[in-house]
Image 1 (cartoon, rainbow, N blue to C red):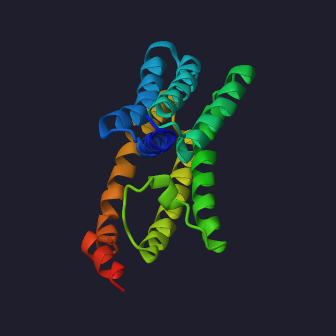
Image 2 (image 1 turned 60 degrees about the vertical axis):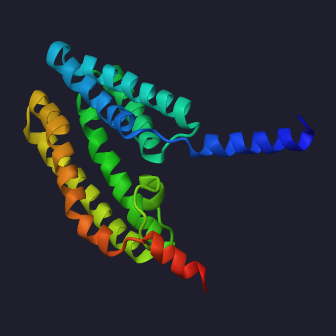
Length: 209
């Protein structure tokens, strides 16, 4: 094998590594796994054990993601950092308020980051979705505003419910309330995505000019 051939092969291997992505099934398992651990541990052992399970779960998901893709997605990293910080405070102070407050702060930060970046003419949502959608810039901007306000809504909703619900009821809301609300919101945005979708034939047509 010549040096040029070896370099070409190494370059191809590097490109292949950069294109590795999580399969839909594995991605869903990584997203739901920590929540499932949190719910089960709370049912059997209480909120403090559930907090520990959640901390272990988010670290495990990051480890699996890195081992498969050789990179770490932004939102899971931010989520993991806040889980570890507020989880540690929950344990150290023996106060479940902190793990509940984490949800409010997490969604507020997501909303503020998305909308705040627009003021600097930056789009963070394409990075968050990791090329799941192929839409034009106007579509991304509209979608960013909507996701930003949706995150603010979730932050406000959690802040109200954590104050009026029992701990077990709040855990049920976190596991079985936020996910359906997010799923319904995603479905409601599909018409916008379809209107601004960049199709292959559009790319081919533009390439001729």
